[in-house]
Length: 134
Image (cartoon, rainbow, N blue to C red; front, side):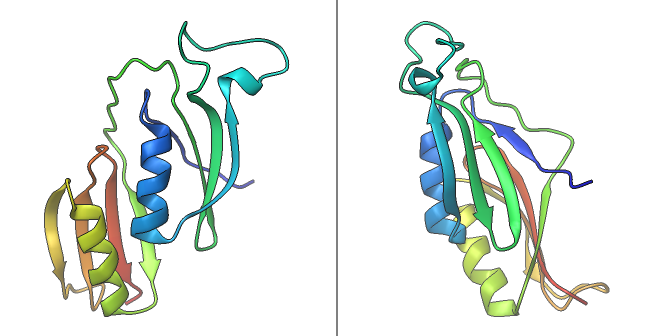
């Protein structure tokens, strides 16, 4: 029973998808706008071009995303996305990309459990924990 993260960007989903494509090499494998819904518009008025549902692949992981209610009030709290990467240079590269416009919480460094571990909150408020397997 796989569990997949589903992130709601409240009006900034398309921007976020492009950011993750550039920062992490995410591949957008599905994207449906509210206007594409065959059952009619479920989003708030004026949201026809907003993202109703999207799926991106980051490495072997699938992350779903949406503009949700388009409230412009995105709040991500109480969780983080952990990514295990191949080597220290890749951790540093992805950390720098995610930190652009975001907030580094713990710069990548050696820890007791990983040769390279760092924590960053990106410009959308999503917390990322990047590491090399220990």
